[in-house]
Image 1 (tube, rainbow, N blue to C red):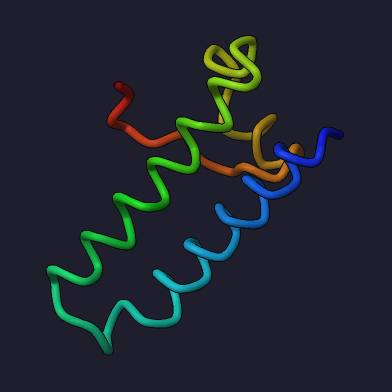
Image 2 (image 1 turned 135 degrees about the vertical axis):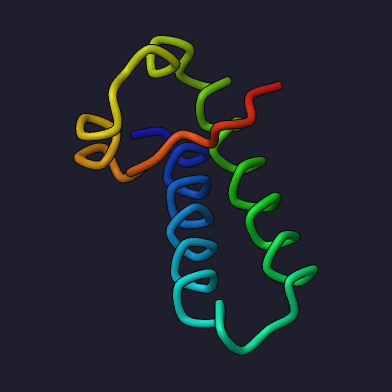
Length: 73
């Protein structure tokens, strides 16, 4: 796996954990910014691997990216 992919997967996992652990402790605005950061990292990963764009969530979970953001740009 390429270094950039590893970094993005780590960032995705970081934001997921932050959202899960802080969802009741931060403002709605802060939570939305975390979700936007997560979505951006997921989009960047998809840009590196365009074939993943049509991959289902279960497969992405095995690859380290368990969900694709609903918002794609």
